[in-house]
Length: 311
Length: 279
Image (tube, rainbow over the protein chains, first blue to last red):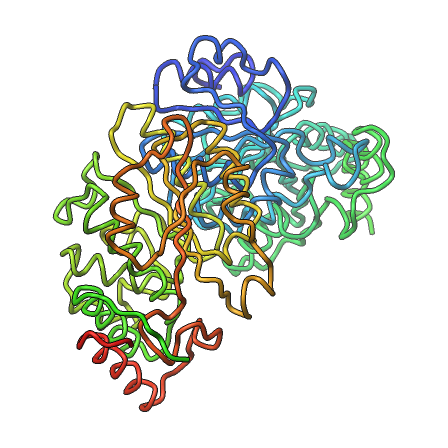
């Protein structure tokens, strides 16, 4: 890790705003007390607005056209679905430096039902030209990526980690937007994971090693753009690529990897896509229960790979 | 339907630019361009501070045409002011032209915001007004919306926000032509009582004949109507104004093509208007 990325992504926003008066935070009716220190110190750069996601993306676009660097934050599902056209037209068509921070991504809000589970954000935002779609594995990684995104003035969507993710093993090289992280090499299979499941994928690889399957792991925090020149060498000549994401099996990381392989005429590896089925999230319960049921825990990932390997 | 409307040479000349551009393109939004022409003319001729030779002049007033389908009127006014050559109007909607059927900021000097999908412009205007006020800029933001566009919920989100933030540097202009694509707004989605709604949403509201340049100019020169609220001006207009064939005709909201006789009729209306007779 690099940078001064302690605390949470909100601390990163506060620090960036302290250094650059163009950085403004726009929340859509999110938790009371969030960034209260920033609100006190930099009241002109803090906006806690109403429940009006469409308007807020347009407002952020207007601000960005006047030279500001808005960071818009709300629950991921509302930030992506409700205001998709504003993200596409107001932000992306105008090529504006706007950061979207989506909280509670994936199955985090399983208990709150399908309206609150953001399991289609990669699919929706991958089709937005110029958008960077980022799913960090931990808050520490999110902080580094957000710092870079703010410094570079990217149009960027970032899944805000919950903070309870299993971290990746240490010392995995630089954390930079667009650069996959090689977690461990493997001759037989390669697990390509993203977001909060990266740590689970690394644990699964460890379990597979005990069974004699040498599975490597790479963490693709930047789902878009996915640079073939960065991805393909890491895939090498393994027989199986396994994608792991807390997202629908369609449209997200697995699809992006398939596209990359197809475009490269990279015919060899089979691809096993682990994720969520083409169904609404149902059943309530805890995040952990939902992940287990979806086969997205370390033992389940290892089991799926084993089943394919010894089929 | 016979129009009894008369206007001055400048409005006739601008209408000729609009009609010529539409005829060059072979299709386009006739009615919505002609209803907002005097609104845009008033803004660019006598109200908004702007420099055609320096479209990004920081202290300019921002004009957003949220009803982007009326853009041929905007193009005509911008070209007339020298933002780009009048000849460019003849390329409307041609492959590779900067002038499309909806305006794009990165293609057309003077266009502040790319619009086309309705309900987007006012939120952008709110963001601009907030940013301009924060840096102490004298610039104002004018956003022109259609009355059919008021069906978009995002417009009312933006109005609530503008009032909440007391954006006295923001002026909302409604092109109240009473007709949307499929028919009269009163039948499709009634927006009345419009002035009362805008007032209830926190705007300081005035209403005027949207083709009366003198009245529009004098009202808009007096903004803000209230020092602590956004201004809203309901401009009562006629869709297709000045072209007898098109006035108040839903079928002339958008034309996919023009027959020779329709082109002749449009030009005939403008000739009559130019002689001081009704179009």
